[in-house]
Length: 79
Image 1 (cartoon, rainbow, N blue to C red):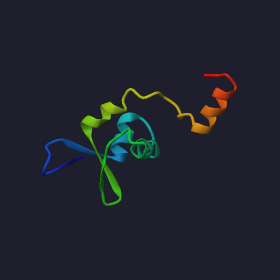
Image 2 (image 1 turned 30 degrees about the vertical axis):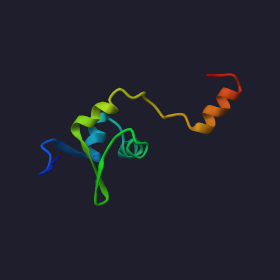
Image 3 (image 1 turned 60 degrees about the vertical axis):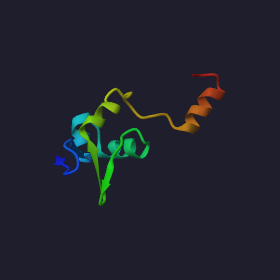
Image 4 (image 1 turned 30 degrees about the horizontal axis):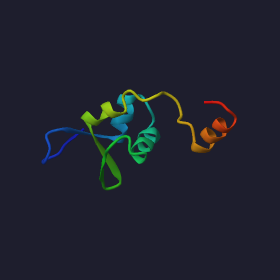
C-alpha cells in the first residue's frame, strides 16, 4: 500500500487489489483495461485508489460474455 504525497488516500497495487477482490491479477488488469477500475500507471505497475474498489465490488461473478458470443446468442433468439 502506498500513500501519495499529493493525496492522503491509500493506493493499492494490482496484487493487493486481486487479493481483496478474491480474483487474479489478470482479472484486475482486465478491469483496468475495460475502464471499470480507474488506476494510475506508475512505471509498469498500476496503482488503484482504495475507495475505487467499490466500483467493482458488486460485479457479476464469472467470465464476461464476448461480443461475438452475445450476438450469436441474440440471433438464435436467446437473451
